[in-house]
Length: 176
Image (cartoon, rainbow, N blue to C red; front, side, top):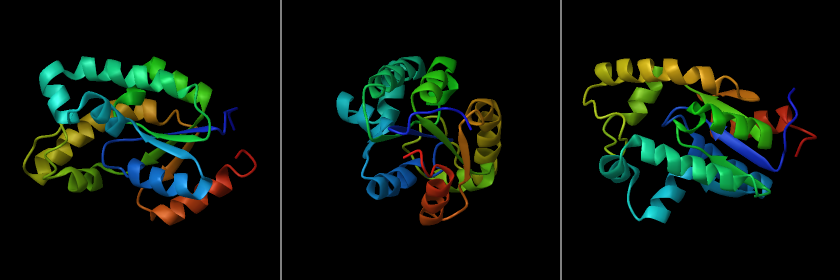
């Protein structure tokens, strides 16, 4: 197993894979603070992610993610639930891998598409039917998995949140 800091846990994975839900339960269980990066950026900017994408573009948003991520290096006893694209910048991924325990919550494209469908808050997916959304998710996920799979630990997102927390506690026993 890689060397990592147990004071910071980074949850990575595609949008709608369950990072925020897992982060909430894990933070309660461990007594860690939780930072959901998308929510933090929305609060800081006073706008939704979708509005920020529309007004400033994806690159501006990615720059804000990187700024927020750099800030997390100074924090202890924190779980950081990242946006789906955040680890896909090599500098961001390296920062996570070198400054905390990085966990990839993996879920297949069909399940992701089912969770995303009809959720108008997702700026990168506006497809209105399941089939085209699944194809779009599959394409984007294929490029992102190269980054996601660098995580210290990969968890199966099909399992219940409580089961994932138990599994994770076993995997990192002694590190926390």
